[in-house]
Image (cartoon, rainbow, N blue to C red):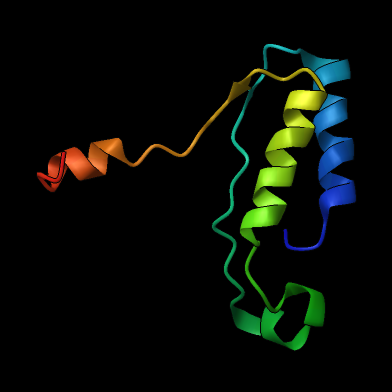
Length: 82
């Protein structure tokens, strides 16, 4: 969620500590405000690229290594670009 890096960090630490460092983690950046979220200032924006990158760094710092990374090569291949 936008603006929730403190919570993100705690969740990632919990996963690393209480579940497993080998946990598969997908940090998503596609949040889009809809419905009544537009009425709540902190929810009325998307996740910034800086927030996404910081969350990925937090996961790595927590010792998590099985992180989903954005890879658009499949799409580029499908479109015949590469």
